[in-house]
Length: 289
Image (cartoon, rainbow, N blue to C red; front, top):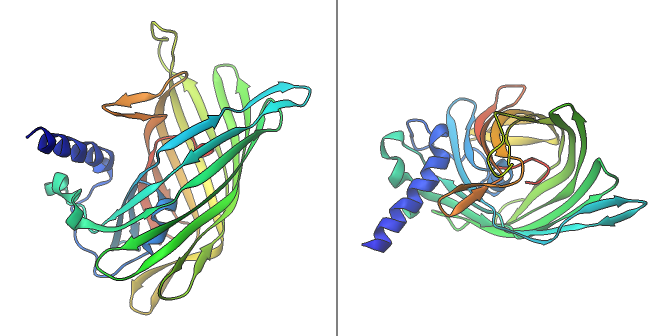
């Protein structure tokens, strides 16, 4: 009975992460985007051309081998992080049956992508973060599997203006997959954006401070991301906008049961041509994700 209760509570935690993005689910008649890209999109609900829904849950266990630091005069320590994103795609998500939506029978795909991030402080305000990951995924209900991989570099330049801390973000890289059947595919996202953190309310008794975090990001795809609306009909997406907001703590993480988060919030994504829109979850800075 205890194990059954624990399993239901675990389902409830996952559902809680998905609930703000849930709509009355219906099974899509065709796959709208290759499931190998689910890790790139992250946790959330995404809609293609108004009639194709994609539901994704991504968890990313990570381990810190060393912390970055910059002491001036060229003295610096490099941060090294190991992480293992696990992405699960769901066939459908029904608000009326949210708990049972997180069920093995409803899992459309799963992929695991171990990787490494290396944070290099260039000076006291500028950091670079090369990253790379490679893994394997499988689409259920078919014999299709795929190697999935991505690599690139991120940049963050931080500024302080009174109580406001803000940063300029940039990223360039590639995301791809090699299936056991069919052709390979690679997309080349290039991102630029801003993020802000501002204190809210009085500090806690331990001195920690609640912060309001918000971000605005623009990503261009050098090669269009192609979605399928119907057999033989491709919908190109050449860019993506994202705006989001979250709450965070300055000196600690936010605990929820056995999980801990850098921040908790929501983001809205959309393409300029209207072919893609979605609600994503903001769990950490784009630079650290």
